[in-house]
Length: 342
Ligand code: NAD
Image (cartoon, rainbow, N blue to C red; front, side, top):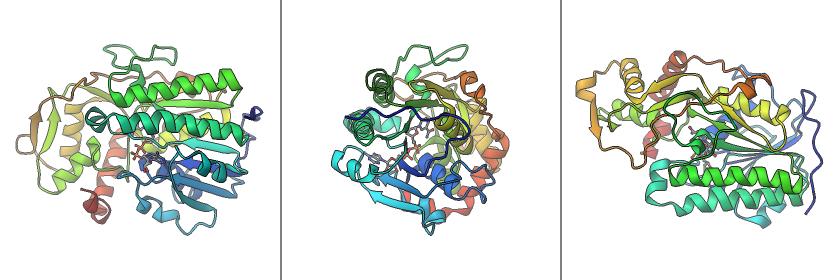
């Protein structure tokens, strides 16, 4: 196995050939659209010298080629249908690639409770298979996308990156295992790899099993929304575009071997979130909300301190009020995207 030389991390880094795994999912596809269509999204250009952006995606139920529709015409985009557990395929794809961003994962906590094994296979074995392939192919830079759920639940205060990992669901346990591999691959092989631990994302193109699109689409269909337990679970909401901005900061300026929290700074109880969604669609609580039994092992509160990343230049741009209004409007306008997924 080769040992990748440390890249010149800093503003001058320009990546030419980039692999995005899981790039047909919610966050990965936003990252790809942002990279290829920066002008339209009115963001900064993360890859000024990009010659090829390869998306490798297994197209599970959560992967959707329509998510790449807006950039499908771009000659720099190459789509490869495949699995991050496939070492041979990874060797073929990684030739000449200088940066890899690993979004590929099984991501829905409820599914992990009913069927954990797929989560271990993709989120742990798949990550390890990918990291090994990056070593073999001398990839200069790897960013692994993690989650704040690896920390467990916190009643008061916020986690720093040095807080212990205490995952409570099979999903978060698998993501925590991958975080340990990130650390180990840097310490053992000198791999130039960093990870992110972001809070709950929202935005367009999110599969309608996650709470915001699930609630919006149900309300648009005239159905009630199911609120877990007492609705007092707290989440810190992060707009997907701010998350992608944070990933680029880690890619270019992150310390090898380090993890970076990424938060939106918008903590809400699920009751408050539900009220915001109802207001945006002018629906009322009593006729539209039903309480359902709580999720097993449901974490009470997540809260990250992301000052380590902010010190490198990260700063979320989207207010929750505007971001949610735009997201709800997107689902109102994009029924042909979400109706077939239900
Ligand atoms: P998603 O479920 O929308 O997309 C996952 C993508 O990975 C899909 O396109 C799927 O087809 C692909 N995939 C799954 N298994 C694969 C495999 N074995 N090989 C190749 N591709 C595979 O997920 P998302 O919400 O976009 O999340 C992306 C990443 O961000 C994940 O690693 C997730 O753990 C992390 N994350 C998400 C959130 C959130 O709020 N959505 C929060 C924190 C962290």
